[in-house]
Length: 399
Image (cartoon, rainbow, N blue to C red; front, side):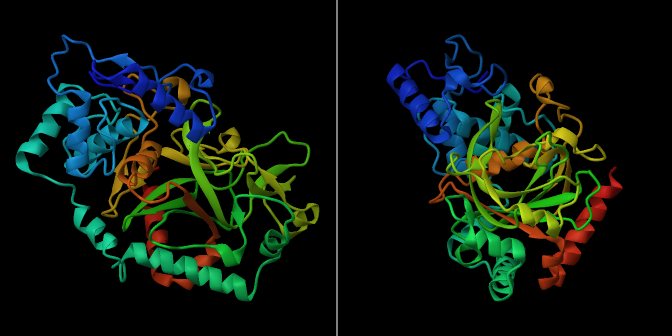
């Protein structure tokens, strides 16, 4: 069995140390400070008497060749990106090929059988032509291209007539990972995440996130608004606009998107009410390094509550894939972190992580541009607005 931290017996300790140092430098957290549990990396050699025939390096090479781990290192060490690539392959077999299984990142005989089937059959993921079209620079007329065009239309709208909040972002005196309108960037060379904040806040997971990478579009359910906070100044609301995020640790427990520079953070405005209004802007903006994009349990009809104290949160029960199919993960999604492991995962949230870390691994930048829009901004593209409304209706029908 290959799992997170498994390495081939010929992997030297120097390579393990180099990987650990690279990870700690990227996440700014020492591995020894990461909480014990399913997500903490513990190096261990692959047993010599393992009945499984594929080594870690053979699995890595196969995943690279098949297109689930582009740019991935074939070094015989199952680190976080290799772990994500295994889960991404397992999820494709489950949700696209409809062959069952739980995408838990554990590479055992069943996953090996599927991987060999793909290798022997010369198979490739059905998104390969879309990715090649993206590489050629041709994204016109696609949903992916329309989302980027919408971002540019919203940028032009607020450049011409900025809201009070965006004027305050422009005038903010200090470093942050939040960009003024003129610096928003919707280049297809970047990885993008859009959050759509609904006009009405009901304390539920009723917002939508759209992940854009390599010409592909995936959608997730969650919340862009805080469900609770015990801060005396009130709940922190992330300001509308574009922000730089980077993978790091959420509360030293699992990988999540964090403000890129960590020390500075993104801009927020605090409100003592559940709904942000113009009067809250009187208190000004502040930079907050703890506004992450992280997991929020099962979601669906549950209340947001303390799952978000200002963070942007993605639930685990379902997502919409690159075919616009609604994919159900509820059978194996955990309720909380204590349940993760033993055939329980973070479900749809893991799909977002695996796409961003494994499939996008060969992109020039590992920064995720997160753009938070208001629901009314969708009026600039009626087709996207109506399609998203239909998606939301499909999700509600499952509850």
